[in-house]
Image (cartoon, one colour):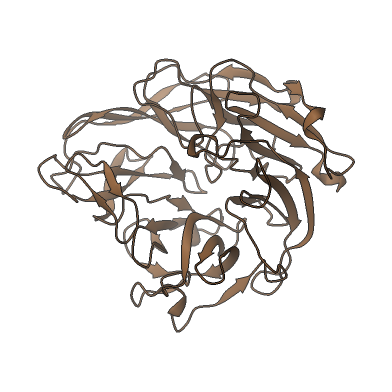
Length: 411
């Protein structure tokens, strides 16, 4: 990794260091910040080359997932070699990396679930989907670039398009793979599930570990091939929690009131049952960070839910403006970007207090990543599980690359 002290200027605190992790002339990026791509000891994680901030090209033979060995000076080692490798997830015990090989096509092809050790050993094929999904006529295609794995390591969820090319606004859906049984089932399906962002809870509770947070994009439209023409409209998306057997569908009291809308990124607050989202307000125009818990489903009414319990984490700001963010696994430290108030974007950390009660405190500006802030170069900050390292994307060098900030424990 390449030291980048030149990025520390204009108010950066003492005690931190910045490194550029990827340096090839080919674009590289971190995996989307909600993904489970870190070893639990914070010593290694996955990123990818020939990729952008929202994924990679299915047909790109140059795309690779790389293991970054932080205790070896950020050494990078290819973990995947298959064209079409996508949607990795690391087990919570750090023993296995699961990923998919996407060779699907509209109403055909195949999808393969594999697993491998960090050193590339014991690569195994768990199952292949090359026929209609059980109990349906659906063949998955347009595979979502993010998977999510249960904290007990037994189930993986992955979204896909379920249409056959014959009609507009055909269903998208969420598949859950049972690893031990090598079985798959569809637990959600419908026109509004085009951008699911599925996220298993990080809780280790044997009951709660079945919960998946999902995003529902109301007002979206797509053509018969599953190409999205309208991502969301009207009162916008809302967020739900569902059990991975398809039962216990719940609501989260965010957005949908005609003024507040979900920006499109949310995450679990560490291992707790609280979740955090960024919301865009029409009046006043600002972007808040709101945490909440799931409540029984009563309809798609967002923050108007009569049982909703919310906490504004940014209520001390006169004009909050935050988009993407993450917490450490113990939900003590928080990292976020601000992309409209600082040229090239700003990177901040803060401290989390009592869930449901306290705002974020101890705000610290780290640096400006210098990104052009196109969709493919979003900053997308996240933290190592122990909260000592922060990561972000930038194309400040002229090519999209992955970066790391070290020394957050000194702040």
